[in-house]
Image 1 (spheres, helix red, strand yellow):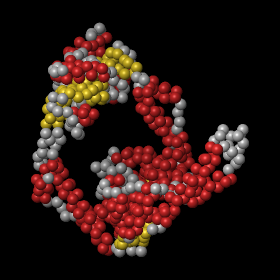
Image 2 (cartoon, rainbow, N blue to C red; image 1 turned 90 degrees about the vertical axis):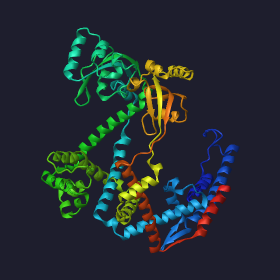
Image 3 (cartoon, helix red, strand yellow; image 1 turned 45 degrees about the horizontal axis):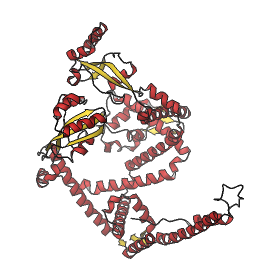
Image 4 (cartoon, rainbow, N blue to C red; image 1 turned 180 degrees about the vertical axis):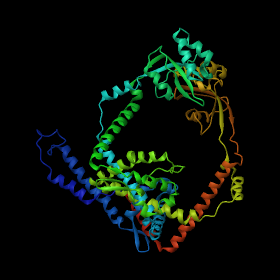
Length: 600
């Protein structure tokens, strides 16, 4: 839906005034013919600007006339075109349900009316005055203000030169990729024994064949047969990027229950260009500088505000957090107790209790006391100092913050009203209703199609293209996978790769889904190389049995449908409760004027 752009009259008059009063420059002082007022080119530009100003004025006048046009009225409150346009811009295109022209405008106008009715009812119910609501909105406003303050005082002040990036590129070992071999064993002592054998001259690959628990690489002497960057390997292996080709690592913990250990030998390395990892490097350098700058800022503000924690109140916090969310805000006199005092203000128990992140388990345990103190020192107190500084700078009154908070308040009011008046009044869903929905809607409980492939992953595109030609010529896909694939987790499955819409290997699935059984796909660029594959089987999506998960899904569908129906009925009730009038002629009028502007 196109909207005519409105330009203020004073902007047009400024353009015209500039044409009349512009400084006259001689050609010797100008930048050539473009500025010389005696030149035909500038006279043409002058006439063009005059015509442009007249055109803009012509476009603006219908907008000015339309802005005050009333499209609807709720009680004695009009909805003018200007408010309607502001709402239309904020609504996703999908909300128009594919409609255009006046039909789309009608949908948008009804949506705006519904929103205003809900807000009026929420205000009438006093939801915005409730203590918990006000606290959550204030918390949101503070979060946005702190984010804005940190953006100005920290993010926008960070800069770095190319040499810093290059230094981090080298120091973080992103300048090389490694091919290595590994031996996975059950205990650290066993790993140390293998290191002793290596020092005595034993062959690493032979020890891997004899001792490694990792089947995928054991028969090839532990060799992973591809090059990895430091971002591609598991965290325990990142330390090997600091050793040289031919060297062997110390025993590295590999996880598992019980803990296992791996020793790794660097077989070869290859250079990685800065361009390939520039994004990682820039992000890490920025993050490091940001952390340093935040710490400097926190230290300086701590000296200024001198926060003092009242540790004797921590037990009160623990008791409050052990309650349900509703009970936590039930005692305002207790919530107003001071937990931390600083120069110029305080942090109350309520401030902390209503800001801590939710956890499934309560905080009323001895070891949680340390967590509360850490949260105060690392989050609550720094954020309070930041908000004080932001307020001193007037950032909490910035137009951007006020707009974001106003929008959030409206969303919270509508959400709270819908929950209270619709969702909490819904009757419980019976077992029979859930089962009936499952039986009547089998398409909603279908699994996903699986595509069984034989896949070969290789490092180079040229090799992948060659293998694809062999596959298309009828070569045995399983044998090619045995001989060439470097996908270690699939190697011992002879290249078998099962693809689905929600699984791994999405890039491969997108190609495979359009192929018939027997078709060959690729090369597909994936992490680690290039993939070619043959589609062996397409397994149709099965219907999921009725069990605890499908029952839960059925209940969710029934609840959503019931909630939507109740919500529509509630909105209709509000339309009857409040006097609502739509001026259809005016809605048609603005559409006609917009079409006139677009046409010419």
